[in-house]
Image (tube, rainbow, N blue to C red; front, side, top):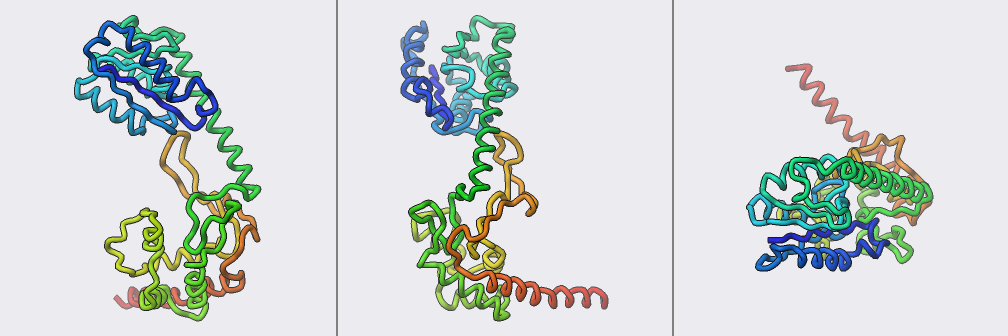
Length: 315
């Protein structure tokens, strides 16, 4: 098999030379010029919309499966950055993995052919190209992060998923969802009247109100497995709603952040780093009701804690 690997990230879309179609044309022309082209299977592996900072991409992972199965003779890419922008990982595959499986690697625009570099690393030029690719990726990530932070501070950046009770309005901002906003008000009113989180879940079940996940599933948004919920709300869901200031019209964002550039791992930020803007969107509950509900929730949690302490003292 001659494998044509093509990658297009969101940052690449503004460059015509990086388009999927142009990469396909370039790689197919190169493949046709190879002696092994006749009789070989030509297979394309395309990652559309993926960053090159790591190898957690579906098409490149599929390609590597074929490599490990010994089914690939040659891999063609437009340039080194298409395979990856992390210099250590990219060089590892080019210098260690592909030679191990006797795979020829060609980066067309970089004029690199592993057949011409057996026993060496491709020279200082290749090393510099990998370093430039990685620096470019980090620079773009920092610029993107800075622009995103500026939009957050202006209240312009919106989360993709709205909290239960809200939906996206025509202007992109959150607006109360007429189907579920009243359920949120009930939860706050019940909590303010002294009903526990467990009691609230029972009332929601008795009224036959679908859980947030069931409501989303009914709209074709199957984010969660609802096979075992059977309409039963959890206390943790109720408590999350009661703790969410966004229901008062407060813009809250920046609760979590990516651990490092290119990583998919996130960490929760300290509340002092959150961005908050009051009166950003239409509230579902008043500030007074929000504070009252939170106050009552704290109060009826304390007796349980006191009871546990008393029991421990008598053991």
